[in-house]
Image (cartoon, rainbow, N blue to C red; front, top):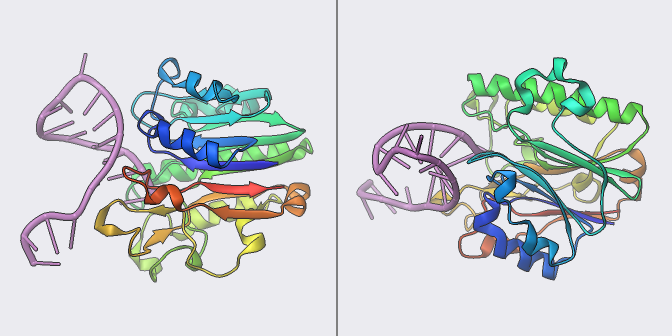
Amino acid sequence: MKIATWNVNSIRTRLAQVIDWLGENPMDVLCLQETKVPDADFPRSPLEELGYHVYISGQKSYNGVALISRQPMSDVSVGFAPVLGPEKVGEFDEQKRLITGIIDESRIISVYVPNGATAFSDQYYYKLSWLKLLHEYLQNMLDKHEKVCIGGDFNIVPDERDIHKKVLPSDEITGTTEPERQALQEIVELGLGDAFRKFTSEGGHYSWWDYRHQAFKKKRGWRIDHFYLSPTLYQQATSCTIDVTPRKLPKPSDHAPVIVEF
DNA sequence: ATGGCAGTTCCTAACTGA
């Protein structure tokens, strides 16, 4: 089974690139983030005409996630509330950042973790709180012995190999701070494995490059788009790669797709 | 170092992004 994750930075702007990419790289499931469109306006028919099933959770301007699946998915749900209950989740489902469904007995999750703006800002603490809910959400699924594959834009650089420059804790760069890495580590310690790191241990592999300063050309990127797999799927994984080809196109997303196979 | 982004919106200027 081949699953990809891609933060497309607006599905309407990137639709032709997504269709072309799927033509070259057929996937069982494509997890999308930053679709930036309300559900009623999502361009579902062009994808359905390619033979995919489309599951979406979007909003105007910001955020938005989707699952594009070759086979129909079962038990599709959006946000934390269907798993954690509305009382615990409160306002945290207002931003559309999470969608899940089951295919071939595996639970696939497309996630868009909050950016966090400036380190230690209100948005930064929102990100940490959101990650705590994600931890509980995944724990719930793993407790039910589900096979879990979560892919998406985590907006966290796991370690020093995953960013082009030397970063000191005192730099306080959002995405690299200790509390964020700790929050991600606690998620990993639920029993999930970073699929990319099963196959590649050296640094210098990135999934996001700033649009400014010719960052892509200068190879100044961050690896912030990840797949985490529960033990059985991690064991069964045969590859995990980043496809930088779409990042070279005119008007690209600032993120490249990541592909896992198991 | 002159300036070196992109997407969205009831603010074509202000915001978010990471």
